[in-house]
Amino acid sequence: MKTKKYQYQPRGWQLDPDQIETDKIQYWNNGIMLTLITNAEAREKVRNGKAFVISGTAIGSMKNGYSEA
Image (cartoon, rainbow, N blue to C red; front, side, top):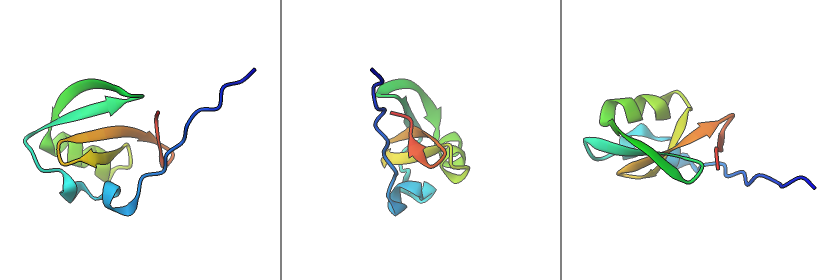
């Protein structure tokens, strides 16, 4: 039996790097916080479509326009 993976497509505001507010940003993948990254790194990941904004202090990884959760 195959388990269906949950797919979340981020909303418009979550694809805006300007929503990132702090100097250090939590980087999440599959419900697990991997590391803290700089604001510039986080903005670059969002700009390139590799991540989406969860909040002003956290981003989540993304692949093909969907959350990797």
